[in-house]
Structure formats: C-alpha cells, structure tokens
Length: 152
Ligand code: DQA
Image (tube, rainbow, N blue to C red):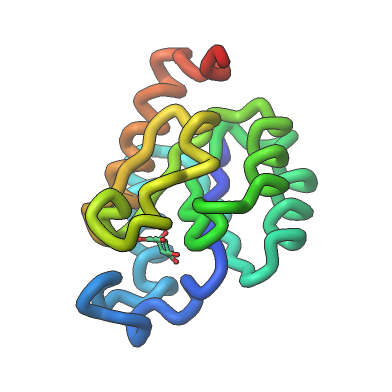
C-alpha cells in the first residue's frame, strides 16, 4: 500500500524557518522519521515538496492512481489554494491535512482552511509528530476500509 506525503511551499526551509514555530527538524529528517514509521506499519511512502501549486497538482494527478491515500501539509496554500483542493478532491483518495503549528491560535488568516472540508482529518499543532499521527490515522482508516469521501 502506497501513501503520498505532500509538502507545500516553504517547507523545504524547515530547520531554519521560524524554528520557534515550526521546530528544528529539517524536511529530510521528518521524511526519514516518516519512512521509519511506514516501515513499522508495513506501508510504502512517496514524499514530494514543491513551492509551486501547479507542481503539487501535477504530482497528485500523476501519482493518485497507484496510491491509497494522501498526507498533506499544504502550508500557505491551506488558506487559499482552491486548485490544490480540487486536485485532492478529484483524486478521490482519503486526505489527512497536517500542520506543524496550531493554525487556530496564530494570525486570523491562518484559521481558515480551504482543504479541511475535503480532508478526513486535520492534525494541527503537534509539530513533526503530527505527521506520524497522520500516518497512523490514515493507515488505521485504510485498514478499517473507512476511506470513502466525506459527504458534502
Ligand atoms: C503551516 C501553517 C501555514 O499557515 C503556513 O503558511 C505554513 C506551515 C504549518 O505547518 O503549521 O507554511 O502549514
């Protein structure tokens, strides 16, 4: 079973980007912790980061067919990325939305997520451990067979 892990704009700078908010781990370190967890859970992960919404969409369109689910930190696209949201919805895959920081307790504009309505869960404010929680949540959902799209 293959799971896509997608990281949005500026997350390539993790480690040095506002460590007091996003933590000190680099994206490569987070990806490798995820790979370790995936090994324990017996799932395969494919990670991708881009600073460009269109490239994220190309990745989803290209990879969705062979995947069972998506973990995504859409970064700032969370708040306005409607074409990213459409691509995620069109994939028909269960989506778990992750944020390192607690987006409900920061600037006002961060409180609204355009991705949340099409995601099965939003995990926010748990730092890098939130990605691990997302992987556990998604694999549990998939093994329970509860991966139908939410009704809207
Ligand atoms: C973020 C929160 C977003 O508001 C922000 O634009 C990011 C990272 C997080 O992981 O906390 O780039 O998604």
